[in-house]
Length: 273
Image 1: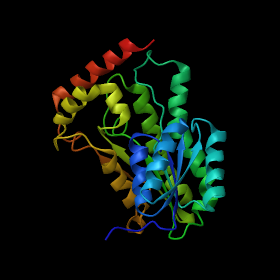
Image 2: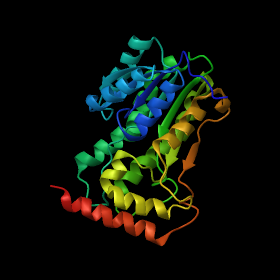
Image 3: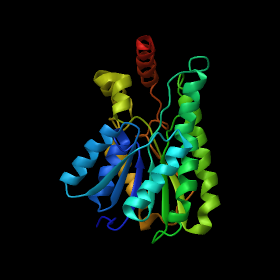
């Protein structure tokens, strides 16, 4: 029997697209009230409409979580809309692809701020509400196997930001464990998200997915399943950890996998202005 999230209030950053969209819809299907935080509000509004059409409850808030003030405002808007916050899923990230010398300072900072700093800001702002959550508050971040379990050439900025997020998860869990709040992460490998499709294209995504040991790319629904578990009462003995979800990519090497990615990254860099 699936756990019900009726009566729970959930913030999902990056809720308008990709993994965030899948996570938001999964919590709404479980009965939760969902606040969709998104930099491009039109995407969040589309997800809100989908949730409401299915009988769920959702609200939207335009927020660039690379800004401290926007993180605080997103938390405040959620409390105003729903009265409380029980769960946060931080899925948003604005991380540029590129190695040393290929990413300017502005893009590097935006990537780091939207990933690791935003996790700090969101947890800090929501901490008083999460501490009051019935059954315990939950903070869940979407990380990556890149920078934590492996290193992908020419994705240094991405890996660095995700590694910082991973370090935050472990340390912050200790900071708030006495308040009944758990802090965990899901670290995906290849996910068939909007971002992956933009980088790899449909053909590249299919080719890359075929190199994954389980035989396919992951989906936003796969990540949502893990988030639902980490937000449930079944996970209340888990904190300061990450669930690696990569289809076995980091335990079964495929020489062709990295070649496909590098070829697509070069094509993307060639299109950049």
